[in-house]
Length: 178
Image 1: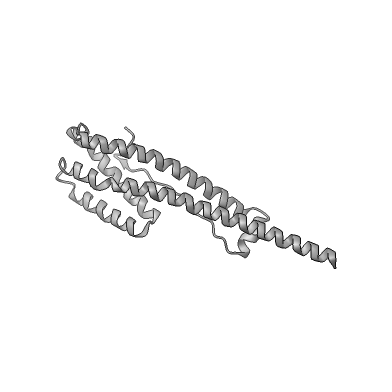
Image 2: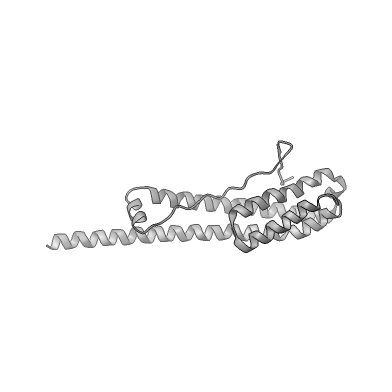
């Protein structure tokens, strides 16, 4: 009888310990995701300034600017990473426009915005690496024995990795770090 009670207490302690570890990992993933959102918001806050700067040089791309404004507003409402990815691709089109307007590349305001963007991009890449590392660690815990049993009992769901597709202009990758 004492042995059964002792084993039962050990099982309860084990389950609680594993549950708490999973909660901590899930919260770490949420925290890493919020870090990405901070840098995405900083990046997307540069958009109006960059759009105004580029508009002066390119009167013909008004549809692109309207699309960026809509995507930015949509992302700000939902904080959906899929919308961030679409906005990222459209945003890179603006940077590709600089190739078509040599005077723009020499504009001080544009150069300053581009420098800020490169800094934010670097921080965003670091935040994305941290997030993806945390997600991978969390998902691995969810799939390995014995934690997977606890995870399925308490309905822990795997997290998705964050990926940004690169915009390609004429089948050549546009690298915004010039």
